[in-house]
Image (cartoon, one colour):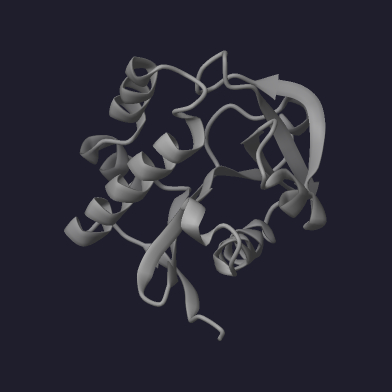
Length: 172
């Protein structure tokens, strides 16, 4: 049976912030808790995924937050921005970044990731390039590659040096 999947843009409402705080924390723990100690994870979540940070990011020009729903349940989110450190290859290009692309583990095998990526790719159409940072051993690497994103040699240790991350780029 097909499930109803929809991706929506979010604005800074109390409900949206609460939903994003739940998703960001839960998915960060699902993805990285087995790679670094609990103290490192709690510090990362505290610094990057708190009420003030999310509100500031939601209200910042050039940022967009998306939430994908499966049967009305929040299943993941994406944070798309024109800000932040970009790969050297894109320094002089009009580019947009998928700063976060996260799906709860229970929804990874379904249509949620496709719906969310479709919306991100639609946003990127107005730019020369799209980039994201993804964990080197992420199960999403082949999914991103199938949609035209290519891994480049430059690495990014944004979260923690023990979590190896690569940039992935798509030229439009």
